[in-house]
Image (cartoon, rainbow, N blue to C red; front, side, top):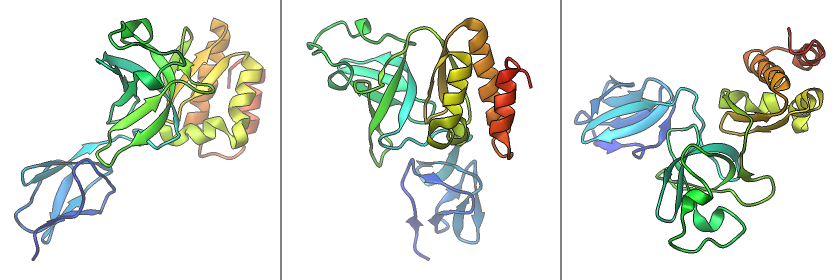
Length: 230
């Protein structure tokens, strides 16, 4: 039997997918041997360490795609830009040229633009096969975030929270008066009167929990009419 790695290191695999064939490969956490194959036990990212193959659990984490709008947090200031946590197994890099509309001279104090723990709305501009992610924060709707609060939801529930053509999130904005940005990566920024922020948070969490149920729009409308109470 041919010894072969069927996927690349850092590839995302699904349960039951054959990762490698041949007895020289050894199953690590998240994988098992079936006959002469190494098979994925769960959704995860492949990690190849010599001949040992294991999976890093994604836990429903976000899988970055070009043109997605995301909310990220600065975790490192680099020589030529910043590194962001975008709520997925891979960090994203923002280069100076893609950060703001003004020119940033080389050697400038980059913390004047984005500092550690700052949040921003960015757009993913590139994802390589090695899962190196680039983002931009200049462009329509993209910016550094100030004030407000950030909550986390399942990225898989984001389409339900946004609603058809933005209908659900628009409803929440109108009823609470809050400015709300929903990132494709499952981070949501909410800014408004403190009480109304709480109403918006409770409403969004309800949508996340009940996303699989029918009649959700009616329940959300009723909830908002009752000041955020179910």
